Length: 151
Picture (cartoon, rainbow, N blue to C red):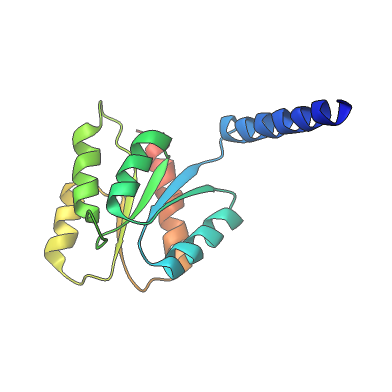
C-alpha cells in the first residue's frame, strides 16, 4: 500500500511542477505543419529555448488545438491537408474577442506576394518563406511574444 501512495504522491507532485511551469511564464507555442522534418526541427529549437511546444499535423487539428490549448503563439504553415493555414487564420481571427490578437507566424514555401499581403491583412506577426534559417524564426518568435504582451 505504501508503494501506491508514494506513486500517487510522485504523480501529483509532477502535475504540480508542470502547472507551476505554466504558471511561472513558460510560453506555449503551437506548431501547425504537415512536414515531419520541419516540425521536428522547430520543436527542438523552441524546446532548447525553454518553450513548451504543442504540435498539430493539419489545419483542422491545429484549429482545434488552438481553441482548446490557448497557446501564446501559433507557427502556422500555409499549405496543409484538410484546412489551409489561411482558413485556420481566418477562423482564429473571426473567433477572437477584444483587441488582443493571438500572435501568428505564417511559414510557407509559396513565393506569391498576394499571399503575403493577405496574411498581413489578417495581422500575422510575421510571414517567413521556406527554407529559412532557424535563427530567423526564433527572432520572430521572441518579437511576436514581446509584442503580444504589450497589446
